[in-house]
Image 1 (cartoon, rainbow, N blue to C red):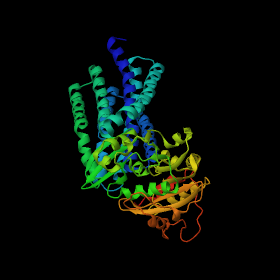
Image 2 (image 1 turned 90 degrees about the vertical axis):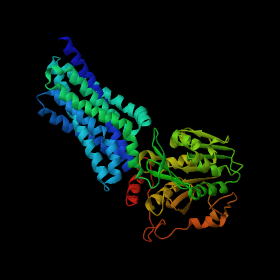
Image 3 (image 1 turned 45 degrees about the vertical axis):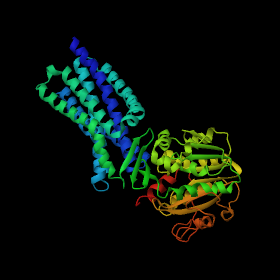
Image 4 (image 1 turned 60 degrees about the vertical axis):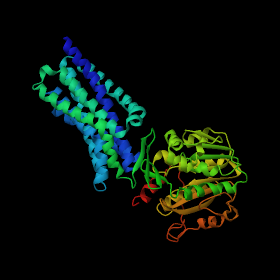
Length: 513
């Protein structure tokens, strides 16, 4: 085998690993894109991975028809992957902003299947080309497959720990597409002697590369203008952390925080939410000293807790350090939370709430649970009997917990299932809801080892909404939002790790909102 063929065969193995890295990155990128824009992360990742693998199977089958011009076929497959994959995120945001409802899902699933099919064609072509060069079939197949599988692992790690947090979804797609185009150009150069009209193919590849480079530098800004249309107010801050997309918007005095597209708070009325979240539980417990906040990385709940001088040991557990960092550095959030998270009484852990309670040996007078709604598997576990049993086991006798539990109006079955799940641990519960203009009617579940008498609670701290004689009225529910459906006694299910009934209930309840 001459020196050129040795270089060619070596690069084929490198190429198989590189394109595999690109393929797995596109696969998980499509899942992340679907999770952010379409919601329900588990559903979107399941669909995109299934479609991508199905596409690979289709592509592998179609590769049998590629019998001539193997190298040139591979080059143009890479050009197509570079173009389609590279512009996928950018176009997804544009379609979401301007097209009719449902078009974005159709586009995403179509692109996933197409890129998967193109990826499936690559590997058989590379194996056949390696064999054609002179490497034995058994040896070439094993090496190419090794490069492919090892590349898959590297691609997954790169996306999770480097590309998504550092570049974001839009830039990452352009960057990975550029790698595909670069591989194609290198292959074109190495095999130039057996390809006609090399300059024309090179011109096409360079043109695609220039488009992708422009996308890296300018695509994010253009996508931001598309994404702006997804939000009511102008975006003033955007970040993709390791865990989620964080967006701040502002219109006059109304500052809003969104996580993965879901509204977390509005400065106009967040006091209503956080006062009801905190003060009933703090008022229930005489001289609460140790307080645990699960979630609440924006600092608003801690702000309310600090109104109680007895609360000298406050622990906040929030998974995403980027949210806490924003709460401690952004002028708008600092004005709202009154620099609460910087108080010396506050200790912050960046950890999963379930794992924190499993490992902790501490007992708390008050536990405030301010977690996102249970719209996927990872969040669902924080609404299970197992999780609330952990909450009970860390709650002092005479202490109280308050749990945000979504809307009894928009998600009636979800709210009462959460309430029933809390009660299934043996704790006493009280149901509370109120109107929050930016959210609508929102519900909470108060829980304690002891019975709860809301009428005995006295709100003594300075508040902007909640007062003692209002609190009891918040426990009254209308016919279309109470625990009985159509006037009949309803047996609500219990959400568990083994039987996560809440996810489907949540998806069904919010379908039209």
